[in-house]
Length: 191
Image 1: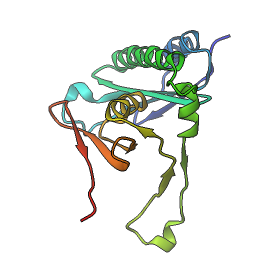
Image 2: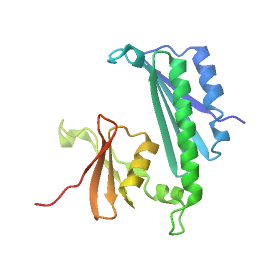
Image 3: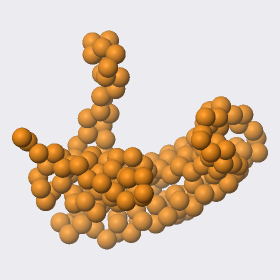
């Protein structure tokens, strides 16, 4: 049985051809990772994109027990964006499976740690907070080193930054991607 796929569109018509294509291609992802419980595909047309070749956007998010994997791609054709996003998702699934089966050395698998570190979002009422804070997130942080933070950042599809607890320095750090493709690390100090 194929995986059920939720398809959402923004600023574009969701034709039967696109729906059939997405259902056929994304529905096969559970062959690579049987634990997938939910798959969501967002397709969008971004008129304000700087480059005309980046106006069609496809984002794929798969969820299962203990994991969330996301990939997003842009192209001048929605089908090309979907194909590239699917290729990226398959690579992320393979990387996730490799980590899950390798383990962590303390007897827990990476998926167990991910379950412990799952983000629990809490939206506060904004009326009491005023117009400045529109959303508040709280999440459990697990100790990790910088390389694990980079891997987690890529697996979640966070392109700009990632907040983590650095086990080596016993402090909260912010990892961010620089324009040249390298990473930067913010290590706060109490002064």
